[in-house]
Length: 76
Image (cartoon, rainbow, N blue to C red):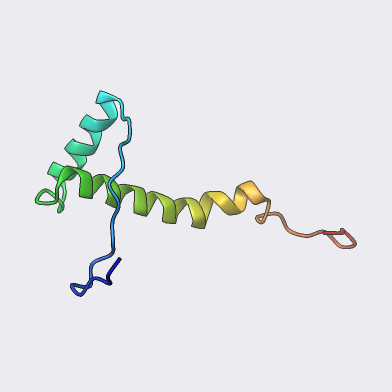
């Protein structure tokens, strides 16, 4: 596949299943914020991106136990 020259990331179209309630919440958030001109699918992608960053920064270390203070003499 040729490299893009417009500095945009290559994207892939996927299908996801959302509940009507979640879709409505996403749309309400998009319309009430600074992203109201963004397409619905682009905004959901944006939410996934910031959600992943939050997950990697805050939640994943807790899941891995990296938040625990090593005790003296404890083996890893």
